[in-house]
Length: 273
Image (tube, rainbow, N blue to C red; front, side, top):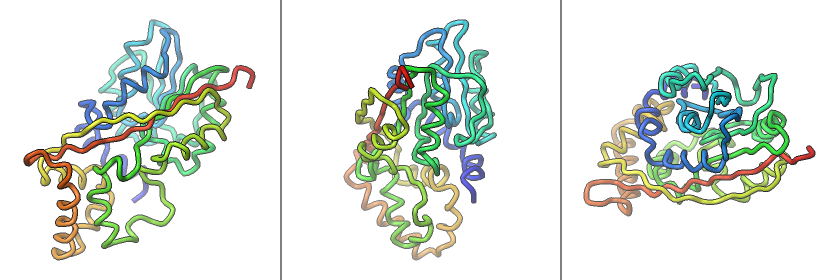
């Protein structure tokens, strides 16, 4: 299943579980918007906007002349975003982040949880810089390492132990920029200056283990769920057992409360670029 097909299939579940309630990693949305220092007349590009979580929080900062433009390659996600944001100050376009086609420039570029999935990150960041006005600001949010975001690794690690080929070698993953120096290198290479990178710790209360398993399989692992479920009862039971062992440190009674590290980076396009 392609990334686009997968994202179209899971966008609704993803929105209901995460973005709609500003929970877990989406508790960082307000901080991304704050760091963007949005002015009333700004033109803002929301890169890989998904279902509109960032765009929605940009709207209150915009005046009559301000606009936010969300781009994503998922038609389903964009359909949700248009209803979720529901503002004449927001415009959404079906575009690949590596082929953005705007004939005007932006004051700010923001991106939340998209950067790690772009095959050619360098190209995306350089294109973003070219779309920015001089001294325009970029703000990026990514997930921390597997140890810092156990929501993903608690189940995925046992899956990979049983089916290592389920994740093709070299394929992008959520922890791709979990180490700040890796993120810093990409942003500096793209030509941004005045860079700041900071870790933020949030939490996500996912419910019981059964709640967690269902949530994970129908959102994060939706593209591989049928493959996992077809492995046979013995293998599936083994994966579940190991996953339950992995979440033990995060149990509060019968409820799982995961820590969630988010790395937020901001920088500027140089004044005389």
